[in-house]
Length: 144
View 1 (cartoon, rainbow, N blue to C red):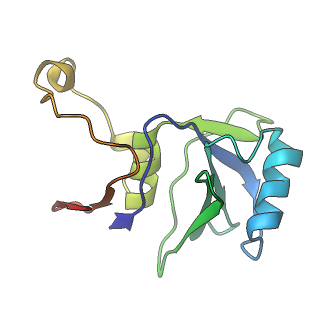
View 2: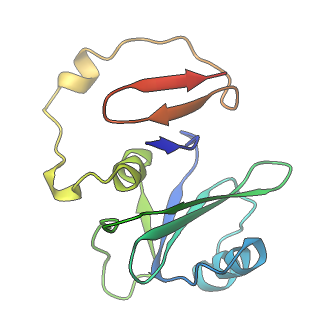
């Protein structure tokens, strides 16, 4: 289960090098500026993993300040996508990040052609920041 709001309009940058999990707001924003060359207040999310890939930190700016989501696995490790040689970051989709956080084997994920667009329900639009979703493999809970 993962309790984090992932905005649809944001970009998701996975830092492709090992990160010291002792880094907090200042250390992670310095990595974003110095190593990746992006503005940490852009509204995009920046994802960092430790050497063993059993911890992840996600840094985002929420308009009035920074927020960090930190997850540590009790056993196992996160599976990460393959990066091009020498790349500092990987641009992920929101779905890919959800799969990583939920422990889905990335190579096993594939879409059936046409089924998602043809039968997708039309939902009313909600304000972006008014809900937080909690995902698990069995259910979806929405908290207002």
